[in-house]
Image 1 (cartoon, rainbow, N blue to C red):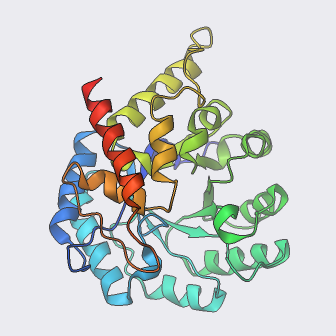
Image 2: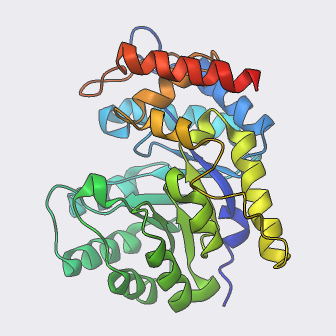
Length: 305
């Protein structure tokens, strides 16, 4: 059975930053500037308050503000996904119930972090939150940050035992996982790449698209690449052998923005296009002078090519 959300969450989604002004307060105007930029460049949807959105450094009032501003910017234009996560299951259930989800198409929730739960603990966590969510849920697997990898068996069991868990943002970078999940669940379960480094191989092996950090700055290029891959899918004899993760035109840019920390790198890059400031909140810090120079030179040379 084909997942009815496939048409909504195929393509290029953007893990959008939360912009701060020079005093490190929420920058409402920058939210609208970024939103207009992404809309102009035809991205498919936006993920608000994920890892890149620095949700862990926002208080509850700020989170409500950020949600309000992004909903205002995107309502009736493209879908929004809201990141809601915690390593405290009971607290997360309460948060989901008490958050105004009007304007959001779905919730994305990361595997519980730091606690290092068993696979059964992960399973029970997502079963619990599925029961209280009024919106469909995307799982988020990013073991490099959480310290735990959701097994394929656990993902399949969660999907089979719930009605509103519709897919996963898979950011392990493991292409075999995508192949195996695709083989097991077909079109009934959304598999979305969460790894800019392996986007092309991921989509060729069954992912329906990507939730991208690089697309904050280069949305049109990411959309163009996705469309090329979609053309390949429907024209089996038209594979572009020159298009690969190893020689992707943004490969070096992706390396640079993740070199020190995310979203410090992408925010600095965006500041060079006057989309927002490069301000991040502690414990994150701005990227080093050396990395700033590398990112600046990359963007300058890229524009001139």
